Length: 186
Picture 1 (cartoon, rainbow, N blue to C red):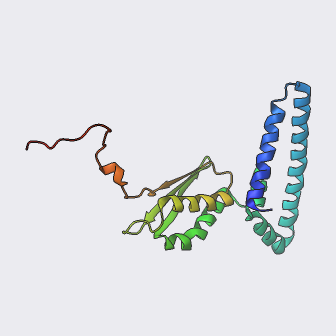
Picture 2 (tube, rainbow, N blue to C red):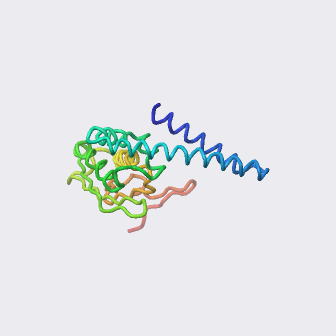
Picture 3 (tube, rainbow, N blue to C red):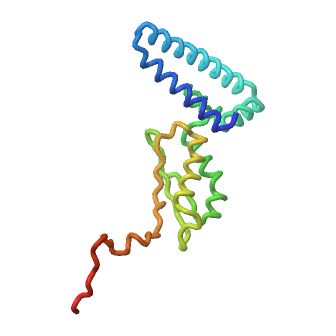
């Protein structure tokens, strides 16, 4: 399953949960939501047990668990159940480290300033000549890498991302239809 297919499936689940929550028959709504919760509890307990078995299986098991935990889809599942074996801060730092070569090519470097309440704050430094890629592309690259490693992040703030580029329409005088500007008598 690709990441986009996974996103489609999670979107469908979310849509169905909203439909169930909107049921007017309170007994049917309650039963459906209890069923979903029971399935989630069973699923979570099973995934937790799998993590425990891998952690207890020695170095080979821990290496396999690390490999599984770095997969974006499995990472999201482990985060959903609160059992990801790698702390949030370490996953964000790892994602940023993996970006170093790519960002170097764009004329930038980035470092994590801090993480609090699901908000990641980064500092982006650029070469003296500015960005080699658009700030939007750099931002998208950073955000994608972090969210794959830490899907529970709610916001990514990047200091230093603004460009010194000023669009031409910002420095030209506004021209209104039907009006012309007269030369001054100076």
